[in-house]
Image (spheres, rainbow, N blue to C red):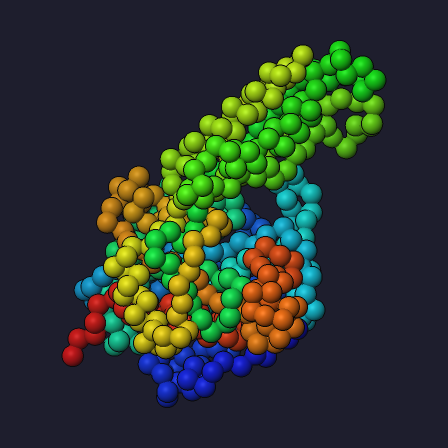
Length: 445
């Protein structure tokens, strides 16, 4: 599946036929950057090499670059006269996934997981494409300052997958160290046709709440469970009851997902005749309102405590919030302007709508909701989706119709997720450039 050989339509491939002359010449260095990042992914909080490559690129283009913001975050600024400030954001981190593609640039990297053990690492969510597109867009705008006025800020955010990077950058004074933006722009890859972008009217992505429920007992012999507090039994019962929170306790009009994502008990030294002293249950909640997240979190706590209390020898229950992210919602006016710019650049048939999905992001922290906590307000945002499925991958997908093919395509976080490189990078770069031009000040003259 050599998706990097898929060809874009002629209007994109020939700069003389579009509004962005010189875009095609950026495709080669952007592709080299993408392939390098794809081969060398780094986990959340460990993005040393990725951050350095991004920072070096931006510094070479004349940006004032800050490194090590909120971990390995990168923030770069380019002033070009009076006008609005626009921020382009991309993410640096990859996932603990073993790549299962047949491309020559597939990742074989490993990294240390939270417990110190080595795990496979892959850019299974498209962040490598996000960085390459942002780098190419920044270079195009830096080389054509006669086309706009204002300030361009480019951010390479660490630790998006753990929903901690945006907060860390803000807590280290991101918006005090660069000009606070008027508008924040971002895009995310998704498994729909490459060459297209998609905008939502209303929420784009859900908010999320991640919890760890710890059940603790005294341990004992598996032959005498009646004499022992059993944390595993309470944790397993909680996991089995959680789907009822969404199915039976939520208005059908309110989209809510409550998932038990992992259960760990005992340790590697335990044998089959030991009842462990603890069990840790990870739970993720997705909703499209803060109130929905609060209600679901309270329900998880109630269910866990009820399961524990039902035992003859109840285990102790402790809940900890691991992360929380807000709902990703684009500003209507900014979205309208960016959508119009995309339609002008790509044609109306390549700009579609987007149904809100239950994936989540920490992107909202960089906009009004999160920035207000750090003394900055009035920051608006637009966030759109970027297609990645090239003709070769579409033809290879199983199914006789479009709906069947979409269901069979590997999505984000899959070990087989593989964007069509050329189409994704060229469309993604053009999408960022045209969006930025739509919000920056017009050139004088």
